[in-house]
Length: 112
Length: 112
Image (cartoon, rainbow over all chains, first blue to last red; front, side, top):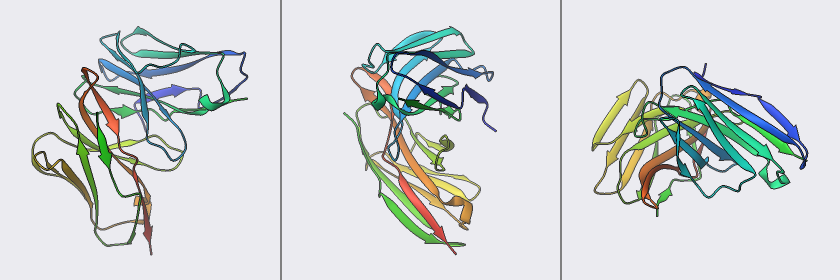
C-alpha cells in the first residue's frame, strides 16, 4: 500500500470544467511533486514544493495551478484543460529534495 | 541537459537473472534511482545509488559507475510478477536547479 494518497482515482472532465486533484502524505516528507505521465512514456516533472514553497515550475501552462496548503497536502487545480492533457497525474513526496521519491497511485484524467 | 538511455524491451525466463542497463549524461549528478512500474500503476521505488558500487536488496541489486555514467539493475530468481517496466531516474542539475528526470523505461517480460 502506498503512503501517498491521491484522490480521485479517475476523473473525466470537460474543457470548460474546473476540478482539483488532491494528494496527501503523513510521512513527514518536506518535498512534494506533481508528475504527468502519458501512455508508454516516463513521468514528466511539473512542479516541486519544498517546505511548502514552490521551488520548481517546469514551464507548465497556467491552466494547471498547484497549491500546497500545508506540509501534508498538495493540490492541483485544473481549469480549461485540453484533450491532450489527458494523462496519469502522479503525486510524489520525499523526505528532502535529495531523497528518493515515493509515488501515489495517481489520478487518471480524461478531458473530453 | 540530461540524457538517459535504457533498452526499450527485454525478455527473460522465470528463475533466471536479468540485467537492465542505464547510461546517462548530466551535470551536477546527485543520485540515480530505479523504479518498477506495472501497467496502469504508479512507479514503486526499488533502489538508490549515489556513490560508486553495488547496492543489494533481496533479489534486486543496483550498480553505479559515476565516471562511466552507467548503472544497471540486476534481478535474480525472476518471477512472473517481475514483468513490468523498469525506470532509471537521475537527479542532476538542469536549468540552474536539481531535479529528477526519468528514462523512457525498459519493459521486461518474464516468460515461463
